[in-house]
Image (cartoon, rainbow, N blue to C red; front, side, top):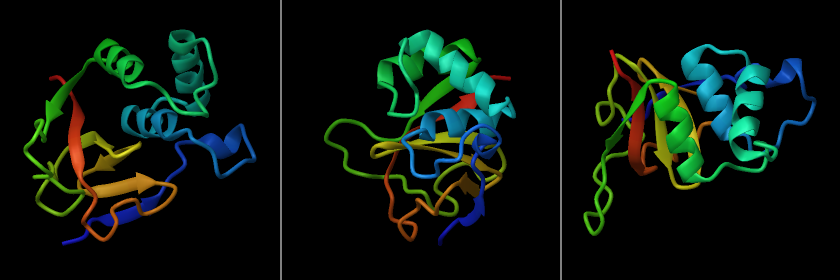
Length: 135
């Protein structure tokens, strides 16, 4: 079953007019942590020394997320094929998580996709794993 979708640019509209940019990492972190978009943008820039609007390497994402207190939960192993999708009941439905999909990061809050577009591909998009805050 498909997840609900809520348009959310993470606050990008307060700082930038462009709408079609590769800032999913900044957006997802801003949405999930409730940090200001520009604060997250600058945080990522300190790690990368480059604009986070053109994508962020996975090794950098891993360092940032760990530093923010998040834990990685893998949902796929080499050779296992896709076992988890952006679909109802396949990911935690009662928490705020950041899902890693093919070429995309997305915040999911209580089972609702928060992004600038519905990235679920009709509940068929594979989730490689997700970041969840450690309590």
